[in-house]
Image (cartoon, rainbow, N blue to C red; front, side, top):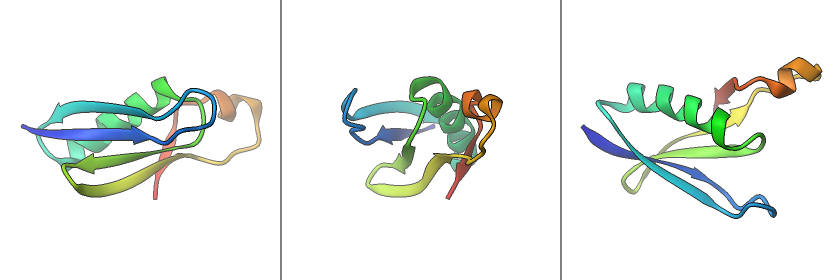
Length: 77
């Protein structure tokens, strides 16, 4: 298992947030990161890191409906 880090930048209200977790590989880490990101911060982006290597940025998928804004779906960029 490897340690991965999900980083949320300072959004001006809650400050920066960092969450470390174990995963077998980057694919499992990405799935876990999507779940964690949806439950921790309602907006903005999060970065997935493996050590000093940034793997991706996770952002909420844009959609104008109220239901979509409450959704925990994120897209990876």
